[in-house]
Image (cartoon, rainbow, N blue to C red; front, side, top):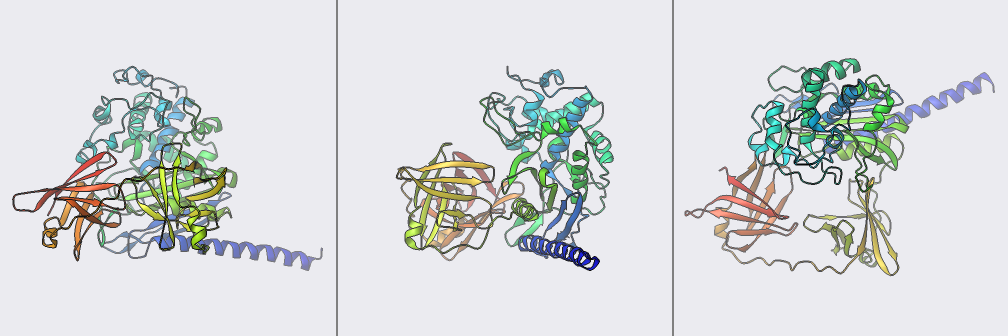
Length: 546
C-alpha cells in the first residue's frame, strides 16, 4: 500500500469515527432534550466507552428560582444507588476477614428479634430476608423530618412480623440496608458516613461525593423538585438520617464513573468479591430474582447489564454498566415524576449499536388488529386485557391503567417510548403472548375470564360537584387534586395524569381507567373534609388542605 493510500485509509477511518461520534451525540441529545425541557428541572448525563468518556452534558435547570442551568458537575442525591456502596463496604469487610455474608445478623446485633428465622447478611444484601421495609410503613412519611440514629431507625421496624421465610421470596427492602449500615459501624468501629467517605470515595478519587446534608454548603448542589399541577415546587424535607445506608449519598455522574472504574480495576475489592455482588440471586426453589448485592441483573438488547436506580425526595437517578462492552451510562434528574430510567436504557442501547425501536410504527388493518384482542392469563396470576377501540389496540392489566400499544410488525407491539413489548402468536389453536420487559419475560395464554360488570354513573346535580373540589394530602409531597371541567369531576395524584371520576352513589366516585374509587367524607355544611382512595384492597385517607 502506498503512503498516500495508507494516509487516505487512516483519514477515512478517523472521519468515520468522528461522524459516528457526532451521530451518537445527536441521538443522546435528542433523547434527553425531548424528556427534559430547558425551562424545568432536568438531568446530568455521562456515557463512557472503552475507558473514555465519550459524552457528557446537562439539560434543564439546577435551580428554578434563580434560573441556574444544570451542568455535568452538578451534585445530586443518588437515592438507592447508595446500596451498591453499602454492599461493597460489606464485601470489603469480608475480604478483610471481619465478617462473612453467610453470618446470621444476630452475630452482630444480638438483640435483633428474628422471630425464629435464620436471617443472614446475604439475605439483607439481596432483598430476600422477609423483614418489613420501613419505607412501606405509614409512619415513614409522618416521621420524614425526624432525625434518628441507626438503632432508633431499626426499632421502627424490627418488631414487625416477618413477611416470608428468608430465601423463599424477593421483595425490595430498605430495612435490610439499614441493618447493614449498623453492622458496618459495629464491625469497623467507624460511622457509616466516615467509612464510605474514607474507604470508598477517597480511594476511588470521588472528590465531589459525600454523605447527604441539607444544612451544609455543597458546591454545585442541584435543588430537588416535586411536580405539581401546572409546574413544580420544592421537594419536601427528608432527614438524611432516615435513608442512611439505603439511600443517603450524594454524587455526580463523573464521580459515579470513577466508582465504576475503581470497581472494575479491583482497587476496592477483589474480582471474586465483586463477582458476588454481580451474580444473579437464586431463591431456595432455584428461581432467579434478577438481583445481586446492591445491583440489578438485567440486559440491554440481549447484552448482560449491571444496573440500579434511585428515588428520593426531589431526585431520581439511574446508572448502567455493560461489562462485555466496557460501557457505563449514568443519568441523574433533580425531580420526581420524570424518571431517567427509560432514557438511560435507550442511551445504553444506542451506545452499543443495538437501539430499541420506540417509534416507526406500522399501520395494520382492523382484521390484523382484532386478531390479538382477548384476555390473557399469566402464570403469576396476572390478567391482561387486550382491547380494540377506534382502530387502536390497548393493554390493561386488571386493576391498572389502560395504555395504547403500537404495532412494529403484525404480531409485535410496544408501549411508545418504552422497551416493554408484546409478542403474539397462535399455537395449537390458541392465542398466546410473551410479555417482555428486557430480562423479565412472562408467558400468557388466552383465557375466558369475564371482566367485572362495568359500573354505571348515576345522575348528580352539577351544582353539588363544587363540594368535592380541593387539595387532599395523601402524604407529605403527594396530594390528590380534585377539580371540575364543565360537569365532570377530575382527579390527579401528584406526578400522575388527570383522570375523570364518575358518581356511583352519594359521595362515592369511581375511575374507569383503574379499579378504584374515591369516598368523600362530607361534613354538615356539605363540603368534603377528607377522601379515601380504595384500590387493590388498599385504603388511603387524605385530609383536605384547602
